[in-house]
Image 1 (tube, one colour):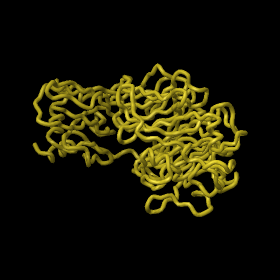
Image 2 (cartoon, helix red, strand yellow):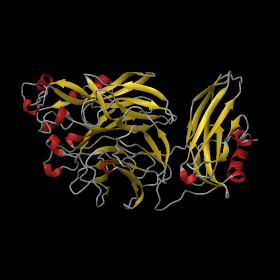
Image 3 (cartoon, rainbow, N blue to C red):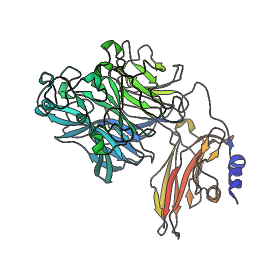
Image 4 (cartoon, helix red, strand yellow):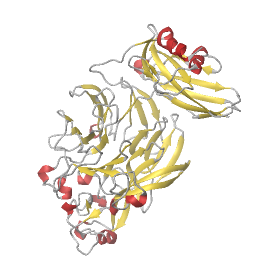
Length: 536
């Protein structure tokens, strides 16, 4: 049978496909978050059911991310963490079943990771951390001694870690705020200069207070934009969003030239508080203890815009979406002597009683809604573009961030060996709205793009003979439980039981699943594609 027959079978003989539901409804999919007073991370569906839990014996270091391979990144709080909000000390990567795949610690007398974590397309991990500077080092760099408190000053930096083993990693890139300072307090220091003439540098004496525990910046969020190779940071104590160039070497990141954008590790952009770089008064301040700035990804409404949770805006919290001032080449635009734009948001959300003084996040969803975590209020909810709330979940505890998950299918391995055979187990988590519906797990060796168009859903498998074969052999000893009915939480488990086979070269295949209404055979969801390589 040829590929077009496989496509025809899928499109007409096996299942009936219907378009996605439009209108004032929550986005289909799952939400990822966990209570800060517990050690578990949850997947929650649109019915408010906790459909999966990653347990842990370690308290949270706050940030969590779901990687493209389905594993969970979770920052952890290690023994001896300083008594500062967000203190962590390490990160773990967990399989769906809770197995710790990687446990990396970044704690000690010289540095301590905190708050957030981010995963890069190459599989490396970004962490934000404090590096401890002595009072003498701070004064030597131009810090006003009156703004010191105690013998240690904590200045933030970012590291990129390449995992090398179950509990090891190599730092392959780093950026330090301490390399990008300016001050006009001590003219004897090399970094003395007019602060307002150097918005690309950070005023070492702003804010003009001695922060508690000398946590100077309190960078509370970390986000990576793969389109521009930017790292976006939330500098809480400066009340600013900062953008830096990840397309530098470590040496370039310590200087003022080089990298993709030609400015080394200097700030490419800052927004929220012009007083921090002497380009405006207090009345021009727009951000107030903000969290979770992100660049909206391709394919989402507002793609390329920034979104941020503005915690302590006068009158209550706000979620703001704004357009960054970019020229056609992707460089940030700044007029001489002026502050960075824009002057305000293009979209905002506020509501009576909506107010979270700290933590919190916001994410744009594929259907145009916005997922909001009002962390100090223990609420995760979803609103439409018009501000109508269409979904809400209340915890009995604070929650740091919440993320949207459109992944339905997980695999417990990414490779099998043909000469010995083996088993790959697939977990399907569609959520309780899909309870009692049918499911089918399929495979293709012809790639995932463009996939099969299902009138609003895309099954990310290209038609080929393997796809037809997995239809014909569903629920056989080779493909167990690949066709069946989802349980009360919308879950099922299937497996490929590969016998020993002879291969001349690695065979890359992809698995994906479709969920359908049993009486009508109408598809209601499709999964991402899960790669599996069968090696000789």
